[in-house]
Image 1 (tube, rainbow, N blue to C red):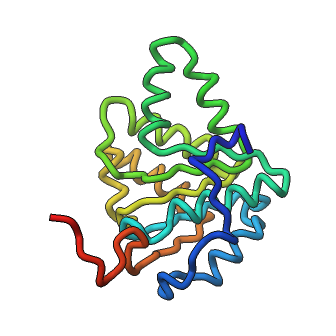
Image 2 (spheres, rainbow, N blue to C red):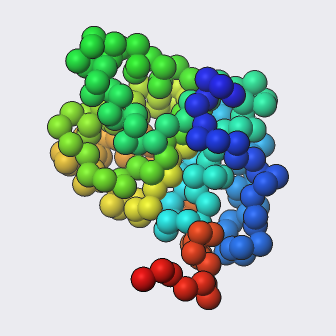
Length: 188
């Protein structure tokens, strides 16, 4: 659990399903069995801010840890920043190995900000090396068709998305934000 580097303790048992009855609960509970990890499949959790994507991704990761799987959790921004820094201090191969050798990699908030410099190449390389070798959970506020431009190059985007989607479970999570439920006035 410590090596997984979760943001905090997020468990499926603690998730408040009642705040958003539109969530695909049966599919998410099925993912929590972690059968997808043995099959090297990729759950992609897509939806607006606040619907529970990050909590659920980490809760599934927590379950995978309890089942004995090696898990690494990171935000897309942190992962790509660390890879950029690793180029400078010559630890790039070691960082890539950590991200590609675990059984389950969780990349949170993909597409929250544009990718710059070598970041599209780094993301492609992580996806390429993990293809059929490990499972990857990705959360994003962007629809799948919005992921392609993140790679800048059409050919690289096509190759990355083809691999990511080949063995995937795409869960579109709609509904209200847990942090801003309907009826609660926002501060002005």
